Image (cartoon, rainbow over all chains, first blue to last red; front, side, top):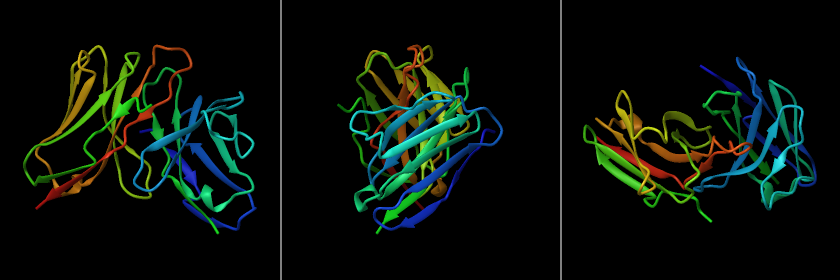
Length: 115
Length: 115
């Protein structure tokens, strides 16, 4: 079946630095990529949606200058957390969808800890 | 505004019995519903989905029922097995609407199967 590879699985960074998270669709073309974050014992909250070659659409309350999303190819999307702060510590998950396919395939998630 | 609600944060079921997880939604534009299973620090794993043109979909031990008039869906797992212990998320999407592919998640229900 469809697989989305997400890296790194966990990262610890110092406050003020930037962190990049990658998601790759391994056997399908991810025309749309979704980025979520999940706080402990809470639901998955959508941060942004990106279509290949287009700018990402951010959900209300999500700072687009802080969470930079790039979806330059049909198999790769990246989320960069810029100038990370401890409150950005969370579990980030990507999800990919292929056009005309009803399925949503999730990556394995990235645990970000900002110290 | 919580468009997808899972009102039971936890559920405990005896091994071999039926597990019933419930989900309610408020947005009448939702036309595609999915159930995911999730372990801590991992991405969600797809279980089963249902389109709004159906009222039931079955896959092995998993059956999803959709009651559109009540805006309610449920996931039945029978027989329940210890390996089913996880957090289950209900999600909904409005695929008919251009540009509205995003999944909206419920809060999740933690299912524990007791031996």
